[in-house]
Image (tube, rainbow, N blue to C red):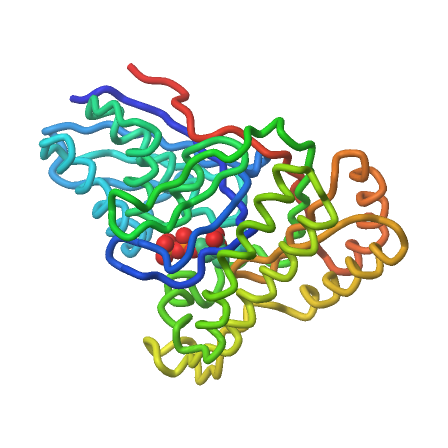
Length: 339
Ligand code: DP6
């Protein structure tokens, strides 16, 4: 029996998005991206290996994982076994304290926590960069949940050069990120399907050509704590990603659920909140949005504005039947216990 190791990681929210892969097998992205770890949500994962187990057993939120998830976890455990030169099967227990697959990328915190717990259980002491590379192979954005605070994922050209690193620690900027959850249903179109279709959008090449500039603007504004510059750039960036999704040729992929023309992650409430955000800014409340591959909206404000934003949301949200999770920038993946 190996050590039993429990590790945890926060999900991260991209302010410059990963959308489209240069190498789908290794999750090498088509572009570099930038994110912040969300402190009010996390995945906790416990792993132990034993030669007594005849197969990997994967439990998620207290129940057996579905076949697709279990197979993806086993593929990841195989990577860790290969690195350690070991063959034992594992028992994996993973718990999320936030809704899966609804716009907070649960695969990011899940594969970050799994990479740390499984590698430590097999006595591998990987550096932050090595862990980030391993987590990326499980789910691309997971590499950004390994370092703490504000994190950049350098696209790189191959396995060794595609990893994430910290650009500023969590305490660099007192930001609040309010995730407005309209739907806790798993999304119909996974981000992996979205990545695969990105290049079918006629606007994809234009997005990629503009991204190095976008990344520098967002990173500079972040380092300078220039909130208006940061906010406008991150909104434009989120809409650019969704423009690619909406104008992708969905018929080019695996048959998705019904005859879709493009990938529409937004719901009516998503658009309603986008317009409300612009209204708040006109009224003097500096708040900006971003949206991942789901209908939920993430609102950024500075700490001093959080009370005012909450008052506005308290008026608006009951009619929209939404709930919120408020996060501050947070640490990277950590070991909770081992022994
Ligand atoms: C919209 O990392 O979930 O959240 O590598 O296929 O597991 P896979 O995709 P994933 O994609 C995340 C897409 C996004 C944008 C982002 O987080 O950068």
